[in-house]
Length: 163
Image (cartoon, rainbow, N blue to C red; front, side, top):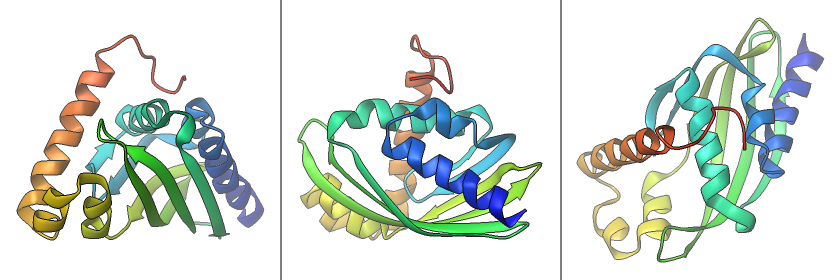
């Protein structure tokens, strides 16, 4: 099972690095649960749709680097970095992320990304991120806004899991 899960996580990040949201979605269980500091908690199709949106909006400048992939019969982890320009202001972001996974039925059932939100906010949001990025209140407001953007994206002419 270790080799299958290692291959699954490698496929996920290889797909991400190649801007292949459909390949990423194929790695997830139908009832996947995801969480990170930017979006908070997402479930099911929301997760694949989030990656699709990020890959699409990340455009050609999105660079994903991954390493240190580990997996056993139940759990896995990876280190990854994303380098991209954020928002209309085109602020350069270099995010460093540690991912943890739980597997079920040969797929990723739970995916948790952790990163320093304040560090990310300083890069992505400039002075506002520097001033308020450390605040739990600010993070909560940002998560709400990120989920609203995802909801609007989901209403567009997109099919979850396709690019």
